[in-house]
Image 1: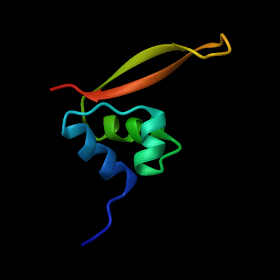
Image 2: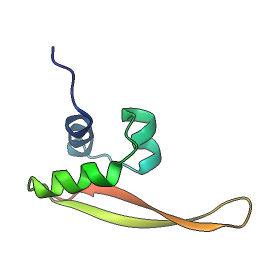
Image 3: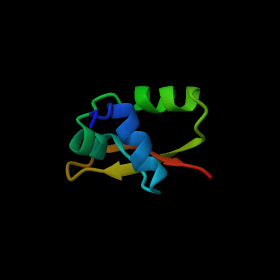
Length: 72
């Protein structure tokens, strides 16, 4: 069986109804550039929504990260 590319693996994951963030993309797929993969998937015609999520660290830093999900 042929190994899947990161792009194929992430698309399969999204098609199963899961959302993906940069942190779990790194953990699950070894993907350091999730936004580039999502850009390529959108360019291929997949309808993917981006949700910006705010977080606050234990040190008081407030930041944001993106969460991506397929829109049906």
